[in-house]
Amino acid sequence: MIQKPKGTYDVYGYKGEQISYLENLMKSLMEKYHYQYVRTPLFESTELFHRGVGETTDIVSKETYDFKDRGDRNMTLRPEGTAGVVRSFIENKMYADPNQPIKTWYYGPMYRYERPQSGRFREFYQFGVEVFGGSDPLLDAEVISIPVNFYKLIGLKGIKVNINSLGDKESRDAYRTALKEYFKPYLNDLCEDCKNRFEKNPLRILDCKVDASKECMKHAPKMIDYLNETSKNHYEKVKEYLDLMCIPYHENPNLVRGLDYYTHTVFEVEADIKGFGSQNVLCGGGRYDHLVEQIGGPDTPGVGFALGLERLLSAIESEEIKLPIEEGIDAYLIPMSENEKSFCFYTMQVLRMNGFKVEMDDCNRALKGNFKQADRLDAKFVILVGEEEIDNEVLTIKNNKTKEEFKVDNEYLVNFLDEKLQDFEIDDHFEEECHTHDHESSM
Ligand code: HAM
Image (cartoon, rainbow, N blue to C red; front, side):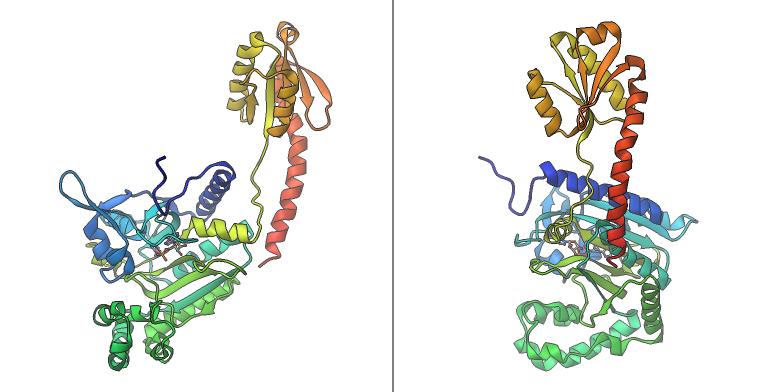
């Protein structure tokens, strides 16, 4: 049997409903933040990621899916969303739009040739935002608030926000020099990757998993001590805005992130959940004030983040959160014989177009089997259609919970269901309110 590629997964059943719920939630949250939806190709010129993500990053040096297309062009499946959105910002001259900053959001699959393990896939989905044309620290805080509020709406309690500042170019250069001076005598103790990083991007040494426990790592200079006044002020302002929004955070001076493009604020949200796997970083992002220029656009500041859908689903499972997925259907139509099937089919289309969730017997079940099916589908109403119903244009409708029976004129069917379903909505609404209240008290 042909199997799915390593590091990928299929979505079906309840997982599909969970994902669909989360996709709707991100969409409605982004509407409230007034961000515009953008979509870029799944593959881009290889050069974009070399310039955008950085040659020294693991992502570009070890993990990209590269291929030559039939025109002999070097292409790469996108390993992340930022570089593509920046390319699109430049190519579509969004910088010329008078309505700055440009606030965008996206959702889609990304590809990294990593060693698959729990929470780490070769095809995974990211929900992310990129904001261009604003350097106010307020925007950094707004971007951090998006995943935090998203997790809050879902009801996820065990999250920890880690932040750090990498400063502006001047601060980073000073820090880079200090790091090189510090690590020079330890160079032989460091792994091969770090020896490379020493020349090209010494900051990334701090991020190394192989060398993490070595003594020299513990006493390395801290970025925070090399921030100039502008960078310090920016960082302080971001923290003030986070405090204002009551978003708790933890300052982690070793947080450098695995991508080369960051300046000033970097952040990650960790799952602080007992028993959660080692891939516990739920999302990450930060400011990238030189990336647009680096990719060939005008000097434009930017800030953004991306969160992984798969790790979020694991966190939801670990915390045993039941998403308020609307299960069940409004009505189930039962034709008493083959003769009433067309009438039921037509009625089903009318009801669906009037906004009801409807199914009918499409397997020629016996009456008993049909009532069982209505229960399995959690139908609120069962509509029975026999010869008599069609002749008299009066339908027999059963409340599937109370078993109460109604005779309803065919032409009033939509009104009847509308009215009767409101009783159900009152019940649902009550449950929803309790649910929301639970979330509010959690933060
Ligand atoms: P990243 O930290 O590489 O950042 O990825 C963001 C999130 O994507 C991670 O925190 C994780 O949840 C998820 N993720 C990454 N790799 C995998 C994988 N192999 N399997 C499953 N989930 C994964 C970025 O991609 C930046 N573009 C974020 C950003 C946007 N920065 C500024 N704007």
